[in-house]
Image 1 (spheres, rainbow, N blue to C red):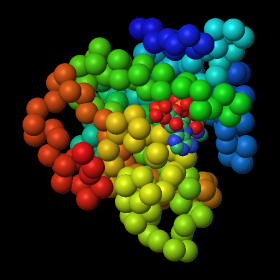
Image 2 (cartoon, rainbow, N blue to C red; image 1 turned 180 degrees about the vertical axis):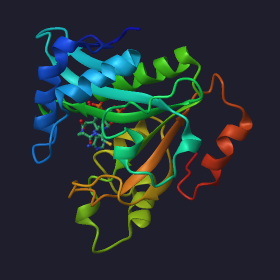
Image 3 (cartoon, rainbow, N blue to C red; image 1 turned 90 degrees about the vertical axis):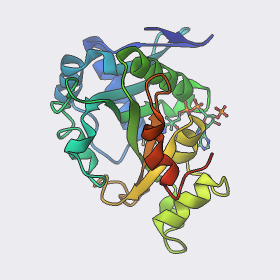
Image 4 (tube, protein in one colour; image 1 turned 90 degrees about the horizontal axis):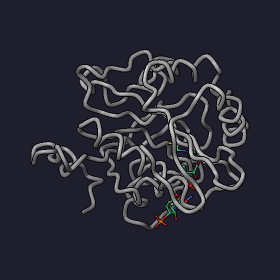
Length: 228
Ligand SMILES: CC(C)(COP(=O)(O)OP(=O)(O)OC[C@H]1O[C@@H](n2cnc3c(N)ncnc32)[C@H](O)[C@@H]1OP(=O)(O)O)[C@@H](O)C(=O)NCCC(=O)NCCS
C-alpha cells in the first residue's frame, strides 16, 4: 500500500519509528502522557497494516501518525470510552475474525506541518486499507476540541449540530467532516484527561461503498446530525 503526494508519502510504521512517533505525540498533546514504546510495539505486533506514518520526502522525518485496529462493534456500547476501545492503548482487543469496523484510535500530524494535506493523505491510506481488507466501515471518536469555549452557551449536541451545519468550526470534527465522515451521536466520558473536549466526542463513521448495502446506511441517515 502506498499513498503519496508530491511532498509526503504514507507507509506502515516500523519499530525504529517509535522515538519519532513519541516526539510528535508530545508536541500534539503536551499536557498528556504520550504513547509508550510498549503500546506502540503492541500495535505493530497485533495489526501491522493498521499502523501508518506519513513521511516527508525532503527531510525523511515522520510528520503524521495513524493507529487503527479492527473491532466487532457489537462487543461495545456507543459510549464505550477510548481506553476500552483500545484495551488500555494496547490494541489486544483487535478482532479481525468477526470485526468489520476499522476503529481509528489515533491520528495526529506534527503541529509544524498541519494544514498541508497530511491528514487527508493519511485518511486516504486508511480508506484504501478498509477497501483492501473488505471491511464495512471506519468508526472513531472525534473529540470535540473546540467545545470548552462554548460549554457555557450550548450543549455538546447543539455544538455538534452547529459544526455539522458549518456555522462553527471545530479543529478536529470539521476536518473529519471534510473527509466525508458522518456523525452518529455525541458521547461523554470518551477521554479522561482532555480539558479541550471536556470528555465529549462525536462518534463518526465512514462507510465503504464497495461492500455496503442500503441497510448499512440506515442508522446514519436516521441520525439527527446527518447531512447529505
Ligand atoms: C486533525 C488533524 C489530524 C488534521 O491534519 P492536517 O494535516 O492538519 O489536515 P489537512 O491539512 O490534511 O486538512 C484536510 C482538510 O481538513 C481541513 N482542516 C484541517 N484542519 C482544520 C481545522 N483546524 N479546522 C477546519 N478545517 C480543518 C483543511 O482545510 C482541509 O480541507 P480540504 O480537504 O478542503 O483542503 C491535525 O490537525 C491534528 O493532528 N490535530 C491534533 C490531533 C487531533 O485532534 N487528532 C484527532 C483526534 S480525534
